[in-house]
Image (cartoon, rainbow, N blue to C red; front, side, top):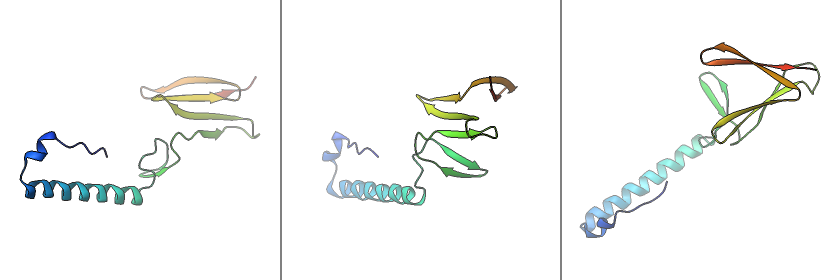
Length: 108
């Protein structure tokens, strides 16, 4: 976390500045503990086994094998806040519901 100090802090009594310093140290320790308990907390990609979230490396590309041969796949990744979907061949995107789509590989 970014440590920005207010310029007015220097005008506080020493005991108050000490309390702020201790509070910041405790915050930093707590953040470090959370990161050690949840190493993927900063990831943007997860494998979900509801309700458990398993982090993958940040920016990971997910490949879905959609056919019997190794070249029948659809991949998904995250770029600039958008999900990018690509396939080895053409893909078909069909509405599934108001908040879901069905993506199918269309082999030529």
